Length: 275
Image (cartoon, rainbow, N blue to C red; front, side, top):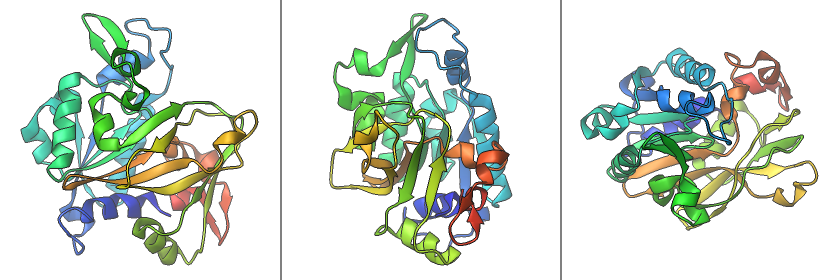
C-alpha cells in the first residue's frame, strides 16, 4: 500500500475527483515552527520529545514533490487562515506536536467543508498559552480529546502512546485505499516492520465513519495487548476526508531513513517502494 496512493485517493475521494492528475492537486506540507520549538524544549517542558520535526517535514515535502504534486509550504499562521487553507486540496501534518486552539478549529472546519488532511503521529498534542506549553488531554480533562479540537474530526479515542521494542503494521483489506494499492503492486497483503523501538499511538475508533486501514501486529511485550488495534485510519468528516497514521510512517521514506526503507516486503518490494 503506497502512501502515494493514499494521498492521491484521500484527495480524490473528496468531491469525486477520480480523474485528477497529481499536478492538478495542491498539497500543503506544514512547516511548524511551534512544533520544532516544543521538540527542542523552547520553552522547557518535561514531555518535550527531542524529535527531528524539521527532517520529517523536509522528507514529506520531497516525497510529495517527487510524486508530481503541486506542493506548497504552510506555516503555523496559515492554519489559522481560512483563505490559505482554501488554496490547497490536502494538508500533510508531519509530526505536528503543537497547534493553537484557533488553528485547530480552523483546520477542523476546513476538513468539514471538503478538505483532506493527512496527520502523521501526535497531531497535535500541545499548545502555547502565555509562554507555557499546555497538554490538550489535561486541559480538556478527557482522553478522547488528546488532540484538542481536531479530535472531533479524527473520531478516535486516545488510549496510549507506548514505545514497544518492535512492532508491525499490517494492511487491512476492505478499504479502496488498501485494495487498489495492493492491486497496483500485485500484492495481496503487505506489512511494515519496525525493528527498533519507536513511539506509536493507540486508540479506539469512536464512530462508524472511521475505517482501519492498518492494524498493529507482533507488538512486543509488555504492549502485546495492543495487537489488532488500528495503526492508521481513513475517516469521513463532513464533506472532507482524513487519513491518520498512528505510526511514524515518514521514517520509512527513503529520503529520511534508507535503512528502514530498504527492509524487504513480500512480493519483491521494499518499504521504500510501499511508502
